[in-house]
Amino acid sequence: MADRKRWTLTAQLPVTFTLHASDRLFEVGHPAFLEPAPASGPVRRLVVIDEKVYALHGEVIEQYFLRSGVEYKILPIVATETQKDLDTLMTILGAMETFHLLRQSEPIIGIGGGVLLDVVGFAASIFRRGVPYIKVPTTLLALVDVSLGVKTAINHFGNRNRLGTYHAPAAVFLDRSFLGTLDRRAFSNGLAEILKMGLLKDARLFELLEVHGPTLIDQKFQEGVALEVIDRAIQTMLEELEPNLWEKSLRRTVDFGHSFSPTIEMRVLPELTHGEAVALDMLLSCELSHGRGLLPEADLTRIRRTAAQLGLPPYHEMFGDPGVLWESLADTVMHRNGAQNLPMISRIGACTFFNDVTFEEVGQAAARLKARQHAEG
Picture 1 (cartoon, rainbow, N blue to C red):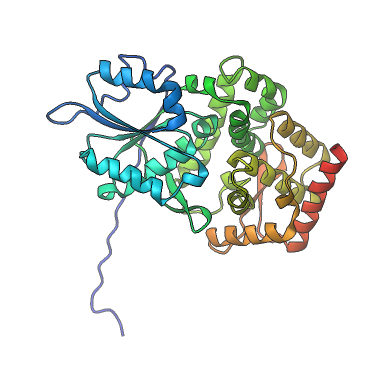
Picture 2: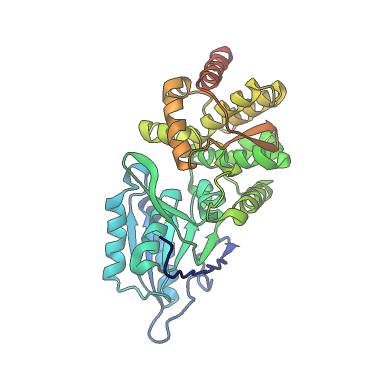
């Protein structure tokens, strides 16, 4: 039977937010967190911060708010992948409720790495159906990746980022001075995502990592070519994200390194960091591309050598198990609505897609990945 009547509603959700490169963000007088102000009463801010960041920088941050005349509450939390869960989400939501957060003029501030920013963003997206929030990334990974998009999430059902929303921040503040307190593994973790963008679309960025990678880690991204590397990584990421911010298209180049790794990463926590799992996924994917005659051996050698210089692992037993890899890919295919949509590197700085990878190919690629590890010692 035909419809008696039909109504169609068409709405648009314009999204604009600015990323501010603002070193020494918490110097007194910096206006970053003082606007917007409520129509009446004092400026108030709820700050959710990684407890490790709070131990290192908490005094400076508190002095900023005190001397700026801001009424504030700081909530330090444990922010690791194993705590990226409903309990942590509810802790943040409880703090928002007891703070009596105004719906539009009191943005919640998240200060920390990718895990914290994801959970704070999720809380902001569902509290009163959406309140503003501000991202302050404190790790290299968060600075060049997590802080740039609108995805929020927590882990659930044993899977990474299974529950989440899209919720754009009010603003993002990128302060390189936080990087000065990171250890080498944290830099390697972030460099995996930078390496990804170099391989996908910016050969110059790859070459910078190839030549300067170890020095960048030694200097904690405070000197030399650090600014060019960060700026190129951010620019290339934004170019890929902006046209498809809500992921209406599931054919995404930035999913390179995220096809086999999500399931494996959750299974081996905390053995592998996110960046290490992504790097292993990229190396396996490069083997798949090489196996089809696309990626030259010389490029594959350069990629493996550069990844090693960045402190990223060349092999893990989970990435040598075809059954585990195929199971991981099956979950990814569901996430991509039934298509593989596997981003693959055809040469350094250029990307293509595979949609017909077989179990046998995955097994052969895994065997080659393992064999190279044995050959290299």
